Length: 310
Image (cartoon, rainbow, N blue to C red; front, side):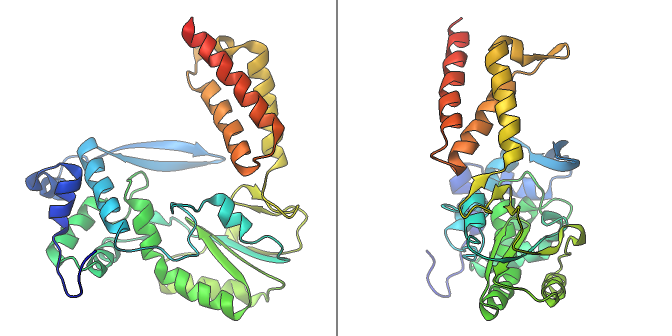
């Protein structure tokens, strides 16, 4: 930790932690050649733009995140990308409530700009030059790239400007406020419709835009899903639609066998079985007492070992 009034050399710390020389760090900050591999992934009906940093830049960004995480912390209400917090703790925070306000932030990472990152680094007592270079490493085209290992932490730190007033608002309303990434939830026994405009104004004041299509108030909803977790029964559970799909995929995998399951429509998907296993693992993580994912995870792992042995 730093002493009061001490000015630290952030670039020196990044060099030590990443193993990269100082001239390499500086070159990454001012590099004209492409620093990212850009591709899209499908998330439901949407496509998400991912920017994967080149190896040296990724190493510098990981070092930056590790260094800053020791000096600055997100607010307690932030559950995304925080140790010992998750989508489960985010959803579980709202158990037992009757009224729910939900929204999310449009293009959250893209809305966080270079000056905000540099100012955040200055909070950790780093000088202006180092903060400028580090912010150049952490941003692309003036904003946080989705795919950089430093982006989640820096996003949480910048969003403290939103979390603090919304946490105070929640306290005033005897409500609970949590945020997972760009997903915002507030719960209480009741909400006035004005909560929407209040939260919209807080976001706007700090340079963010509310996603109007995903903004609503629900009073005692029969189905209550928060970041993919159902809390309608009084404790966190996986959605029924997810369970149905996983059961179907699991039975198909067990029926066809690993090798046949990997072959689909004339081509081989080498990760198809791993995805099914990942979904079963997630189900067990949310519902530790559920028998289906435990039992079938063991069966699939046994099949995968047999295939590996030949």
